[in-house]
Amino acid sequence: MLPVLDLAADPDTLRPALREAAHSAGFFYLVGHGVPEREISGILALAREFFALPAAAKDKISQLESPQFRGYSRLGGELTNGAVDWREQVDIGPERAVIPGAEGYLRLQGPNLWPSALPGFRPAFERWDALLAEVGLRLLRHWSVSLGAAESHFDAAFARDPATLIKVVRYPGSADTAQGVGAHKDSGVLTLLLVEPGSRGLQVEGEDGGWIDAEPLPGAFIVNIGELLEVATGGYLRATRHRVLAPAPGTDRISIPYFLNPALDARIPVITLPPELAAHSRGVEADPENPIFDTYGANAWKSRTRAHPDVALRHHGISPPAR
Image (cartoon, rainbow, N blue to C red; front, side):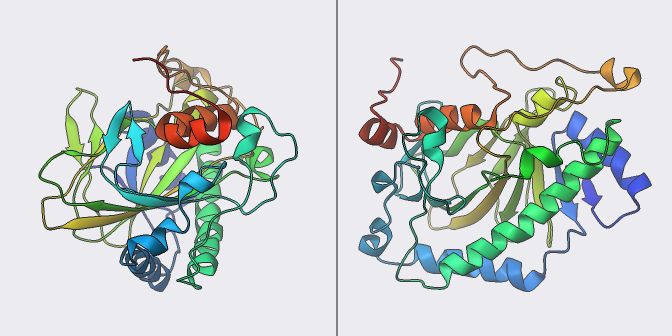
């Protein structure tokens, strides 16, 4: 089982445990986070309401209409490593104006597409963004101290226009594919994942290359580090591959990952580790098929254009690479 950490614990107890969990497993359960149960149950219920809408209502906010990769993706509308993921979802980012004349990853900034059939959807998810940003930043400050840096080490990167991302996901059962989402690493700083109680499917890659089931723990978020924390720590903390198996036929699963990211043009500040930790740093993983950048927007642009080649081609003229 993955480690269980309590954000309300004494910092002298929490910080070394947090450092070790992120160094070894890269994933852990987080309790004591302070997000009220009514918010958790409410956001899951709202997700269910959205996915129960008729297809025509969901397609009114189709991601195909968003140059910023926002809105609804139908079943089979996203890829991981070139293979189709069996899920439908809504992607939500910060509500901001488009940057005039933007190039490259700055084209990710812009408005969301909100479902008119559910007027409570927007305020609920904007509140969710604020709640989870606070949890994520608390974690980062504890990590900073545990790694020998100042508590405020990462603050500047998040002080201006953080580019957070929320995915509201439904995995329907399938007898035709095992891939809910393929094996991958997250491209940002850290992820706070909410999964419906009693559901299964998330698996984390162990150090031996096997897969560990990460079933939901009541009241807990599942937390994992992203590629930018790997960069920030020279590989002492390493982003861990994970995947989601499609549910059994006749069942489905709601999952709401929250990705805490700095501004699109922010470079993640590197921590100079104390010698006793630096000795155990593994270096940033070098994979020519998946380069890791220290600027968040470059990492995000890589991920979004690969995952949604139809949007990338339609709005940005980017053709999928030959395979």
